[in-house]
Amino acid sequence: MKDPKQGAGVWEDLFHRVMDGAARAEDLAQFHDVLRQNPEAVDAWIRLTHLHAELASGVLLEGATHLPRDARPEGEGGSVVRSNPVEIPWRRHLGRIAAALVVGLLLGGFGTSVLRGVSELRWGKLATLLADSFESDVAPVVTGPSEHMGVWSGDVTQMVGAQQGVQPRSGSRMLRFVSAAHEGTTGETGEKGSYIADVYRLLDLRPFTKELAPGDLSLRFSAYFNANGRAERDAYTARIYLHALSEATIRKGLLQSSVQQLLQESLAATLDQISVDRDPATWQRRVAELRLPPQTEFVWVHVSIIHPGGRSPDGPRTFSGHFLDDAEAALLRRDVGP
Image 1: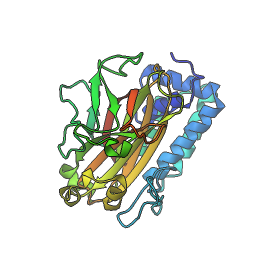
Image 2 (image 1 turned 180 degrees about the horizontal axis):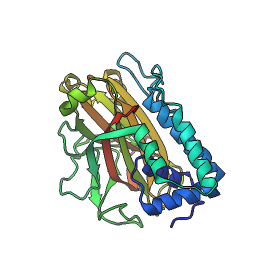
Image 3 (image 1 turned 90 degrees about the vertical axis):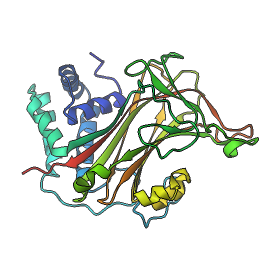
C-alpha cells in the first residue's frame, strides 16, 4: 500500500477513483488511511465534493475558463465567465455526505455503499469516447492539426517505450513530445521560434445529438504527464484545452487557427493546467471538464507542453523528455436522482 502521507497529487488521483466508483479494495483501504491520518486530506476531500456539486449545478470549477460564443478572450487564457447556477435540491447534500463519511471514518466506520452514493449523485457515464494508452500501431500525424478522427495530430511526437528513467504508466508505450513544431516547418526561426508543443484529437459527438438536447451533458478529459530528471530547472507547464464546436466551424478550417481565434468560434471552452515535476517515478494526472451546449457536434481536445525558456532565436524548442499517457475522454450525464 502507498504511504497515506503522500501529497495532494496522489490524493487527487485516489479521490477521483473513489468518486467515480472505480476504486478497488486496496484503494478504499488507502482512502480510509489517508483521511484518518491527514487533516489536509480531509479538507481536500470535502472541497472536491463541493466543487463537483458546483459543476453539476452549472457553476464551473474554480480556475476553469468557460467562453460562450460571444465572449472575447483576454490574452491566451481568455476571460472567466461563470454560468448562472441552477439550484438542484441535492446539490448541497454532497458536502454533507462527504462530512458524514469523514466522521464515520474517524469513528472507525466504513461503508462502500456511501461511496457509491457519492459517485451516483455526481455524474453518470454515458459513453467512453477515448481510452488511449498509445499501444496501437496508429502513429500520430506530425504535420500539424488534422481533422481526421481516431488519430492524434500536431507537432512532432513519438510513441516510445520506457526511456530516460520513465516507465509507461500502463502498457509498454507512451507518447513523447519531441518538438514545438510540426514536420514541414521552414525558415530560420520556424513558427516564430515556437516554444509550445501541441497535440490534438477530434471527438465526434454527432451520434449523441438526442442526449445533448437537454443540455445536461459534460465531457471529462483526463491524462497523465511525466518528465525525466534532466529537464530544465524551471517548471514546464502542461495545458489541456477543450473546445465545443459545430461542424460549420470545422468546415471553415479553423482547427488550424490560433487558440485565440478558435476560442472566439467555440460554443464553449475550458482550460486547465499543471506544473510538471521532474520526478520520473511519478505520473501526474490532470482532469478538464466541459459542460456541453446542446448544439455541440464535436469536441476538439488540445494538449500542450510549454517550454519555460520561451521563444528561441534558434528555432522551435525541443523537449528533452516529456511524456503523455493514459488519455481518456468520457461523456457524462448529470444524474439528479429523486
